[in-house]
Length: 182
Ligand code: IMP
Ligand code: MG
Image 1 (cartoon, rainbow, N blue to C red):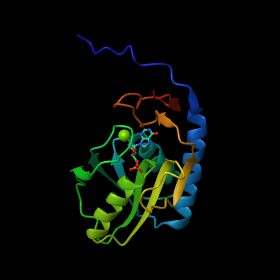
Image 2 (image 1 turned 180 degrees about the vertical axis):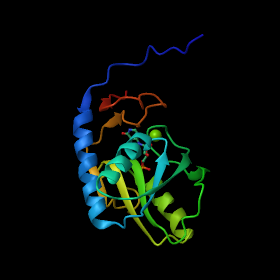
Image 3 (image 1 turned 90 degrees about the vertical axis):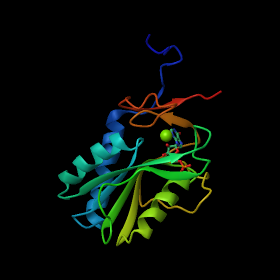
């Protein structure tokens, strides 16, 4: 029996695939101008998989030679934010000691996720950390986290697509859209 997908709706577009690509290209330019060529890209799963895939190709385009690794954090919260406690669910495969890290996530909201990830990496002796996020919601921070590279600043709406999910759906959308939560 297939799952019941009748709750899946058409999702109105906030940013088109083309608009996303041009911001990704701009971010790669900025990163290329300010980070070492052999940067260690650490992508937080699952939300940042599509952003990371496009970003590293754009980094190649500006002459960078990144290494790439992935980490999955689990957070126990409401499902639409990371209000609960956070832990490493699947870890990196390699040491990050003495590396210049570019930490990549889909969206910066409360700051809990990135604050935790940054903490873990610092404890492992990284040389430096910069943070890139595709999206940022201002005025929602519980913890002091600053992203060095930001694709779009968005209003306080729940967004999906391009890797971002609602209940693990909609990650496949090539654009970013808005879900009305009720
Ligand atoms: P933070 O830890 O509150 O900064 O939130 C970051 C995480 O919450 C992201 O990695 C997402 O998984 C999730 N999140 C926050 N806002 C949204 C949204 O609008 N759509 C989808 N996921 C979101
Ligand atoms: Mg999520």
